[in-house]
Image (cartoon, rainbow, N blue to C red; front, side):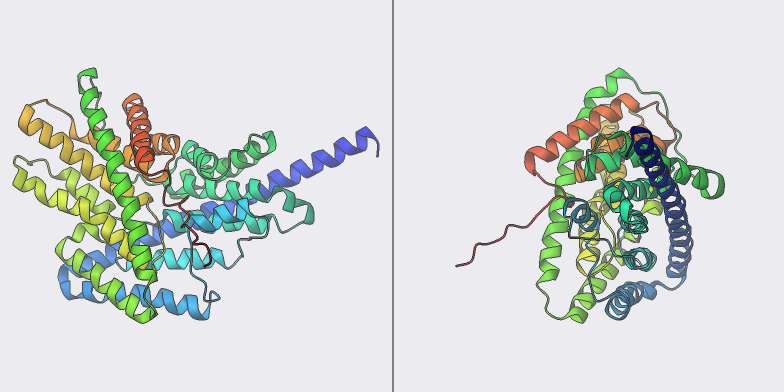
Length: 424
């Protein structure tokens, strides 16, 4: 083979990989955006129904978890969804593949979990579904198998981009959590998928998640932002420990229906007492932010209780068979933590801190500590806020939170591997 013919063949392969990445980006955007729209619609519908008929909260979580169990048993090969670990295993182990049925499995299970009250989000369901699209693309031609990791990362990065309209966060998520490949083709294929996903989302589906009125920050507030970052790292560890504890606890149940019944009843009781725990919790964040007359600890106490119960509700949801992860719970906890810290400091020390700034910084910091991906959290928070005014304190908070969480736990929910006991 001459040098010229080799270069032509190589160029064709690169073009084919980029074409596959662009198709992956398009399909990932459609998966992510339709799942987001459907989840928001039905979640709002069910929350409104509960306002008029409170008893429904004792029925909905059971319906959701039971339906997931039936679908898994009869339609999705009776295999539990393992979330992000499935994607990591596919990338790190050549023998492991993400089968095509993982696309509808995570799509519908994620939808059912959240809309029926499971206290988690659709982010992980989306990421695994879109990663499976990338894996499927790599099987469409024999030579594409060599680029499986590139296409999987293209899919998951495109999925996260679509959910939050955050292309930089999508790229960094693929790099920080899944693979640190530095090849030019890898980066170009991921960027290709992200750009196609962003274009579809931005022009067809985009709607801001929150309406934040970000204000300029002052250097005098920096020490208190550092305090928030340390507390965020501790909260991230608390969330990780909760998830691992309850997964182990529910894994000890021998009867699946008992596990579903116990899990759904626990979720129902928690949501009945604290409605803000329902589903993703973004509605609860909006309500808390809108509450400006927090002038005593008594009024702050419900926010603190909800923040501390969110990891429990999330962990029970996942342990009982729900589909989801720690993205939305981390954002939820961070928002409430930032609100509580700013109000307490203002109440007792009259510092004049801006609560909404602390909400955004808290969201970024807890997410950073939870997933051990500070740069993903930085750019995700800026995208959610639709502003880079807080970029410097967000960077500082995310790095500190990640450091604090790493000092206590060397692993995240994604990277944790249970110890294997040696045979006697």
